[in-house]
Image (cartoon, rainbow, N blue to C red; front, side):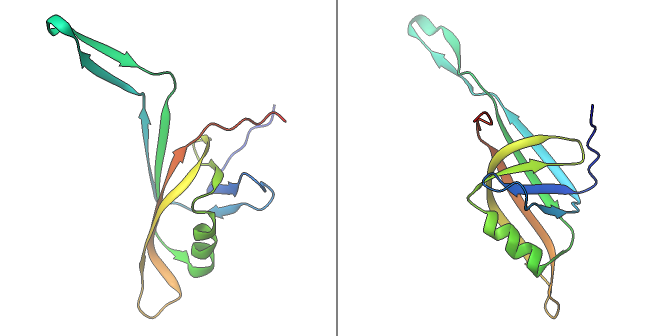
Length: 125
């Protein structure tokens, strides 16, 4: 059995997994959400309503990133991508909310972050 040991974040568009963007990250937070809510019915009865499935959102930040890598990351925004991290999470999701803080005189961005929201992908063809 093959074990994959990643030291960087791997992001590749679902349409072309052969051309990944590989970047070192500084922080990552994961939000696992199970859709559930409580409804009140007649007689004051509260019941939980849950829908199947779970949604994962991953927020990732990078300490320093060159402009070329940043522009490649912006090209992936709004697309379905495959995201792999050091903990060997594999998430298919949509890249959104890309933010960056720039230095004044350099071609380097100080802080870059984005949010990835999971989607269902059928890998069987």
